[in-house]
Length: 597
Image: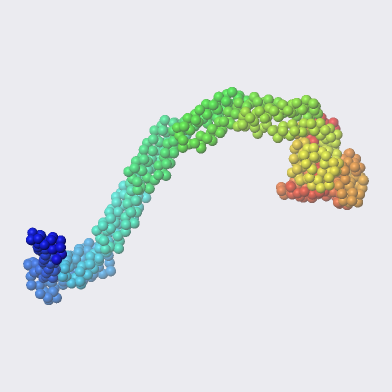
């Protein structure tokens, strides 16, 4: 009905539908026959194979494999050979004759399996063959590796005693034996890829060591010749050494002498030798420039530094890898150039400095103001124009800046200090300030006042030893003469014989000062005209205590009684300790021309 519905009911249409139906039925029948044929083939194939095998001449009518005479005979031969091998071995290592017996047993066992056919051979026969093969591979592995290890040991002995070629031959044989075991005896426990790799690396190392040694010798010889100034010979030898190392890296990549680190070392040495001539020339020029500066030949020093700079720039452009080295030399060259160019200006500044100091020493204050301004202006210009000059460290910039800032106060400071210093017997060129430093003078010099008890005429207190040292340093600038803290010996000579003095009126002590500091110069002076060498405030001295981190304050303070003051008390304190009963005085060193003793 389906076909009638598709093609219609006319006769021609009925015939067309019938043909299509027959065609489809034919396809179904063909498929069914194909499947049936495949089923029959699959069912009867083993019999066909057995029939085919029975046509072989050596397997016809085998009968029961357990009773077949030929098969029994072959198995007996395998057993006899195996027992003979085990008997010969008797706990010792197998030799070639023993291994030949085992190999013959393996061949007989294979004949047993071929006799039955591999598809129907009993599992026991296959397991027996595998056992024999495993034993053979194991024994052959033991035999060959024992030889390989012996050869490796012998190779090492020969190599270390200088017979390198013979040692290399033994090592190659040891490597080949390990390779043979790895490739031909897959069941052996002596298969060792890591040992083979190690031997191969060692062989390659020994093969390439002569090349590496030759390259090293050439490199060392080239460096030595460069140090001797034989630059052309050094370049030729270093070029040859570098080519040898490049050959090692290209052809023998597995050798330990073919490392990138070695190649970089040779490349670095090649660069060093290429620049050696210019580098040595630069260093000679710089040394000559230094010598010229010592003798104040500024133009010659400048010319040599300029030539060195040109050579250094040439190296920097051609060899960028030496940028750090060339930069360091460039800094030195720039410093030399600035130093050489600045020499005339430095001489002018030194002249101005000496003029200012001379004016201060003579208290010539009016010309001093102009001279110190010129000095400061010249210094500022010098720093701007020659920032790398080595003379910058000798310009006394702090001194000039301080004096310029204090130029209007300096006349008063000079008058106060010169009026307050006296000579001390036995100290020809030293003058000691008659009183402790008052707060008014300390503030003028150091621009601050750390004192606990405030008052312009009171002694400065709570001042550290370091601050006292800064005071005398600045005072030296102002006076044009060295100032310092007094020594223990100087103060002892200034005090004189205490047994002949009246300390009740010459000291401010616990009784008459009520434990408070008093204005300087208000007690009675001692016979030499010095005030408060004992009492009022203890005084820092220049002498250190046995511990370099400690300093000494001498003379006691207004807190002490007369008995203690008479013993000249001293206290060890830290460099930065503050105490409200500690101050200081200073000494000034004058030249012989100003000595009035």
